[in-house]
Length: 147
Length: 423
Image 1 (cartoon, rainbow over the protein chains, first blue to last red):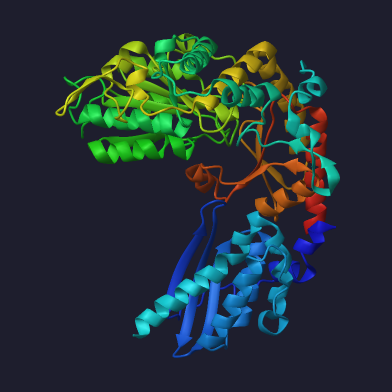
Image 2 (cartoon, rainbow over the protein chains, first blue to last red):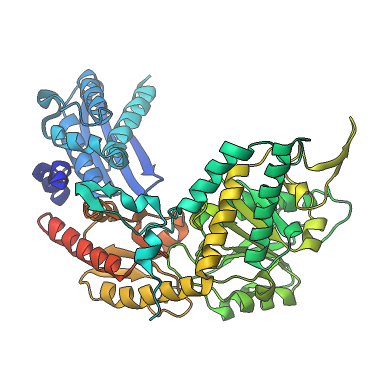
């Protein structure tokens, strides 16, 4: 069934037990992103230690896809260097824009490849991307601060 | 219970011939967002482009004459439909534009662009009154008008039953109130507001009444004279018509008083290099070559509605509500937002399911061929009031029957089963 391609077990697991969903008070940059078309919101704290993503914590409301995606994204990015996060971000956004054609690089995206099916549902792509765009924004703001 | 012959009606709407996901028949419960179009509406636009296309109000040739006649016939149809006269019907590109037209024309009046101070002149001593259940389109234009003129924006809260109390209205309105803008039927709650009573209150203070009728004109018999309002806005696309057409109805004497908002071709009597003299309404408010095919399509839509009878359409929707509401309330973990009694209520059902996000519910319903809206429905303040990010909204119309409600109920239960494994 098409529905199972969208809501993979991995996604439902992350939705049920989201990782890093607990705002940490220490961070280099805090961002708040919303999805004005559906009212979903995320607050994301990024703790950057020079070139290293030391920690990401977040809180927010949203559908299973957006919540699972935030959980997957933060799990992936913590402990990575900025250039590694860039590779991951690029691979993920490319997969999201591929209309179901790209499966994603499992070495880079790990659990993130479970979200490949989302790209076949145009209305849901922005749900999956919400936290990733928040991370991207927090990263560029943090880099500005480091200058 | 008085239902329309839905099987017969559906044959008039080509879209119901197609299949949707999983090769299912379409169950369209999203008419609150936009309605489907009967063949007569589609054909009228194709016929215009195939046979009569010309710019209205300017050409000296046969096609221009025919285009003029079709376009103005649609204005006549609209006037009859609302119980007004043709001079009172202004075509815009949307209901949103109609409401903005009013807000900006009132701004212009407040700047002193019309010859004298009049009822439309707002200043820092004025108040604008709205309700908490407004669509953004009937909220933000007034927020901005208040900012531009220094006027104060006030609102009447929505009660726990999804309705507005007239006592609250009475307490909020006073001699400073210049404008009372409110929705006839809520696009989220389905509440139908007591227009006549609100207008009576407004009249005591000589305030201008503006009715957002987007969710009522397609669904109920409307007569602007009986309602006693000063202005009304609605959009064609929610009333079986094409997108890109809105209507502003206003009382003639007020439209005469009100300065225009959009300036340019075809809204003038004469022009010099220094200034211009404007046409009489409605032309004063219609500049540029209009959406002719769209307007003609709307005329066909209103004729279709009239042929069915607005009274019967309303009865049909009441019957659907009477059937749907108890069934929805029976579902464990479902919260229905809006009145649970079917008096003065439209067939809009907004609900939340415990532990399942509206988007996820919508996705499962889509797999069952059921189209609903999910999200905040352009009524964010109302969502915040209820402390939710959004709802699922099923909205019924003349092509829905009770079996569509059965499918909806089944779909909701299936969404609950599907996500039970995740909670």
